[in-house]
Length: 220
Image (cartoon, rainbow, N blue to C red; front, side, top):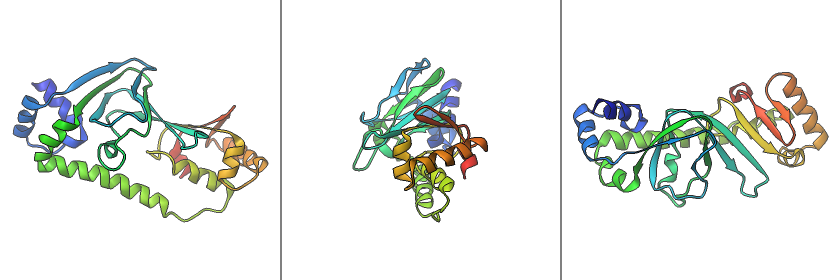
């Protein structure tokens, strides 16, 4: 019971619940535990979000592909992590990104049916879920309404920051130079010069067909 209780306490949606409520939930909930080796697929983009999936241990690589498949972003996210809580409800209930285990990853999942029939009975759980969704919406809205920067380096940084889930940590952008030039409305030569300057500043690393950002927080 202590192990199960401690596990639930790691999950953000359960924080603040009374011990007696957690004990009751442990007696009812069907928790599905799983382990993944490095490189294994945890969830695929386009698959139905029919459960809450929590990363309890390890690091996952989350890859999101643009609608025209011209570029992709990969983020490396550490546990504890709730994967795409916004994808469970709404017009589109499919996962947006594909998640791979970057090292050994431990997960636990709870079915959507149980979430709706049992967990939503608890006010603190409902509030926690609404706070998660609201915080994400407010963060995205803030990025959308940020003042437009005019320098090419700032436009490149804004493009990166506007397409990632968390504005910190390591990111990987796979994109052709021509495509990035079109997006930031500049020439290929201008973008190449700006990227090389950013590399000299330690903001990113250039590789063939991809840009690695060691710490996206430095782009802010």
